[in-house]
Length: 176
Image 1: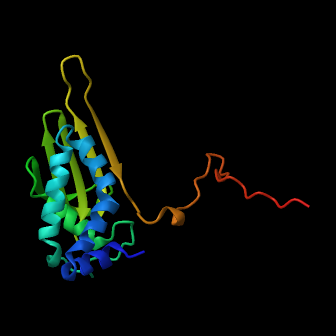
Image 2 (image 1 turned 45 degrees about the vertical axis):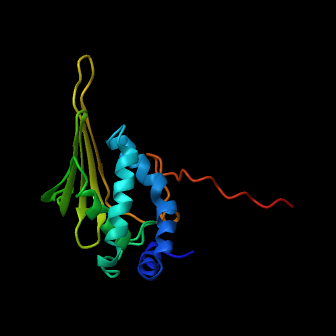
Image 3 (image 1 turned 180 degrees about the vertical axis):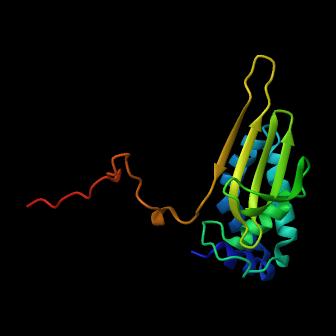
């Protein structure tokens, strides 16, 4: 299977290759946009892909080192596209909860706001913050997710219980 970086590079010569990126990532992007901008996700998704396609030749393949499912080149393209969408603004240089320097991108809507902090060298997501405003009879709240590491799920450490025991299912023992 071609990586996102390979597809993005190939799409410069063969524009139809970009469609594979759209198919591969539209579900996750639409879900993200639906949570952040209910009612506008379809239009925002179309705008993201139009701008990403138009800008696909301007990204440096060697920009980062992360091997997350969406590679650094595609993530960089999508984060830069997000900053040009209505209701989204580049908030500039900030520190996340862990004290790491990053670039903030904010989405402000009537129900509240969302902010993502991106590490500029690798385009890796450092933190995501959602703030919900109280509506009449409703509740307000803040959700903060800080990402200390990222990578393929199969490389993740096995979670442990408070007593230190592994939560992974033991391998079945052969019979006989």
